[in-house]
Image: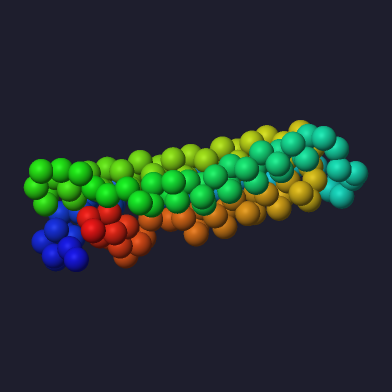
Length: 154
């Protein structure tokens, strides 16, 4: 269990991670809004062509990878000579983990936004919506971040 002093020292790193994750989410949302205003909504519901299908498969793979990715490192424990070194090691590995997760989701999001610009289909809209929900689900809240650090220290 981390002490209040240790949690206080973690806060700047957590705020930096949350700022980065928030910026990625806002950039994706703004890009989606711009593309949604440019899209020709009359074409929605046409037959499913290969482009939306490929975009959906890629999107599902990336979103699935973002969710499953931490399971690869779940058994990893922090390394270091001192307690402070172990905490820094855990924080760095968790930060990288979160950033890779967000990059994978953002790859799915932007790929399907590109597909949405070229060939509007409800499948593509579904993947964009799923990526948005995944962004919110994976956001590094303080309690989740501290729990992850504590797990790595055990």
